[in-house]
Image 1 (tube, rainbow, N blue to C red):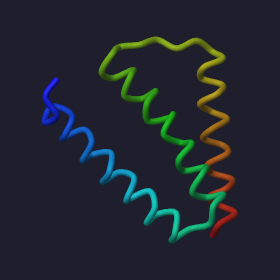
Image 2: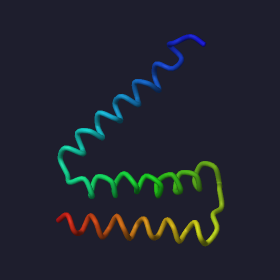
Image 3: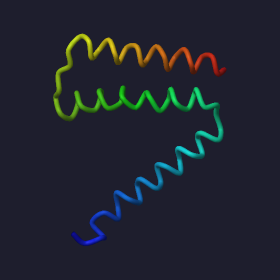
Image 4: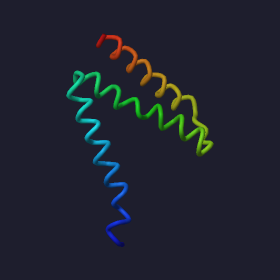
Length: 78
């Protein structure tokens, strides 16, 4: 496999990691980790829109608990 095929995803990963490090230096660790954990909520939303995936009740319960945790930690950081 030629190296240039992996160049664009590698550059995106470096850019994303740099943004993560800048974000982590600006907020406390607990807020950073909860916001990072909320990525799962966006993955669920995109998988419903793009892949037309259907989730069961316990999946939705998990997503709801993540949202509640993100709201509580975000509220506590204000």
